[in-house]
Image (cartoon, rainbow over all chains, first blue to last red; front, side, top):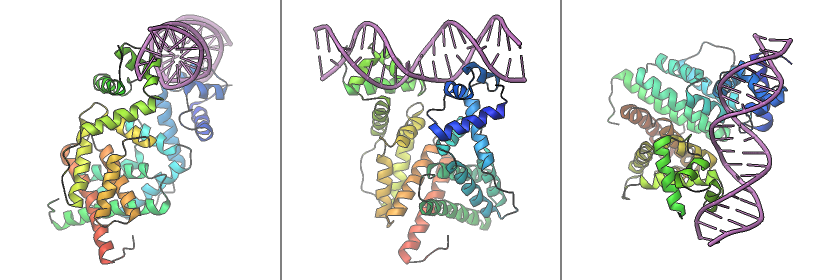
Length: 175
Length: 175
DNA sequence: ACCTGAACACCGTTCAAGT
DNA sequence: ACCTGAACACCGTTCAAGT
C-alpha cells in the first residue's frame, strides 16, 4: 500500500477514536496502515508534527460556514465551534491542548478570538490575554455539562465585555 | 543507600529543576538515586502516583501562612500562591496541569477557590465552574508577564463578582 | 522495609537500501 | 515519492529473590 499524508492523518483520527490518545503511537499507527514505523517519517518529521496535523484536521472538520457577525457573537461562536470539534473525537480536548501547548499547530481558534476582541475595541494586550483565557476555558470545560459550560463562558465573556465598555468610556478600574 | 518516600520526591524535584519534566523518567530518577528502577515501585505504585506526590510537594512548598481574609481576597491569594509555586520549579505548570488532569492530586487550590466562592454567595454550580475557570486561567498564564497575568485574572474575577452580585439581588441575566 | 537482577512489552527515531 | 529492514537508545512495569 502507498499512502499520502492525508491518508495517514485520516487513519490517525480513526485510531484516536478507537483506542484513545495514549494508544496513538507511531508504531501502532504504522501497524494499522500495514507499514513499517519508519515509513511515517517520510510524511512527518516527527510525532509532534503528526499530532499537529491531526489536531488541525480535527479543527478543520469542525468548522462551520463563515458568517458576518458581531464581534461578541463571533467570540461565542468560535468557542462553541471549538468545543464541538473536540467533542466529536475521543480525547479531542487532550489532543488540541497538547498540540496547542507545544505551539506547533491548532492556533486558529485563539487567533480568531483575538481578532474578534480587537474588533470589539480591545487593545493588543487585552486581545491576547482574553483570547488565551477563553481558549483555555473551553479546553478545560469540554467534559462539563452544557449548562455549566455556558455558565462559565458567560462569566468570562461578561468580564471581557465589561472591561471593553470601560475602556471605551475611558473609565479606569482600580482592579 | 536506603531511601524513604520523601527522599524520592525530593530527588525528583531536583531532577525536574535540572532536566525538565520530559527527562523525569522512572529509570533516570532511579539512576540519580543510585538504585534499580524497580526499587521505586516500593514507594509508589506507578509513575502517576509519583508525579502526584511531586506536584503536591511543589504546592505545599509554595503555601503561605494562613490568614483570615475576605472571600475575594482569598480567591486572588490562592491564584497568586499557585502561580508562585509553579514558577518556583522548571515545568511547574506542566507538572501541576498533568497531575490535575489525571484527577489524582494537586486538587487543593481548586477546592480552596470553590470554598471562597461559596463564602461569597455562589451556589454549588457557580463555585465549581468558577474555581475550575480560575485554576485553568492560572495554569495557562504562568508564562505571561505579571502585568498580563493580573489583567486577565481581574477580567475573570470581575465576571465572577458581577455574577455573584446579580445572584444576591435576584437579578437574572439573559446570558 | 527496602532493594537487586533480569525480564517483558513496549516507545520514537535514524539510516542505508530498495522500487 | 514512498517504503523496507534493521538497529539504537530509550521507556514503564513485574516478579522472584535477597537483606
